[in-house]
Structures are given as C-alpha cells and as structure tokens.
Image (tube, rainbow, N blue to C red):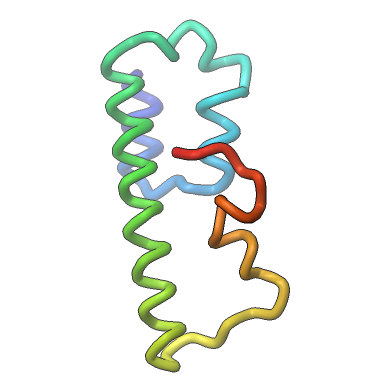
Length: 82
C-alpha cells in the first residue's frame, strides 16, 4: 500500500484504471478499504482533469484533437463507469 500511495502522490495517472482494476499484482488489495479509497481519489482527480480540459477546449485555450471525442465521453465509447 505504501508504494501505491507514493506512486499516486508522485502523479502517476497513466493507465490507472486498467492497472488498478485488472492488473494481477493488485488482486489481493482490491477489497481493502485503503485501496478502494485510493482508487476513488484517482477517479475523482481524473474527472477534475477532464472537466478542466473540456473547459479549456470550450474557451479555446486548448484545441480539440480530432478523433479524441469518444475518449472523453465514456457513455459513447462503451467504457465502464468510474
């Protein structure tokens, strides 16, 4: 748990959902409240980042990359909910 906490605190976000939900090294941790809390923390942070990116796109601060629309809309991509 200590290593996971340190990794999250260091800013790890790449493939976080797959890693935590499906990667076998986390199997024994998935039912632990501390692990679940860290997963919720990551999900909340990623949702805030998405909202910020959408705000920046709407204001013109950040361009919309063609083909990336589905990645930011899980309800249309078939991705599982957070």
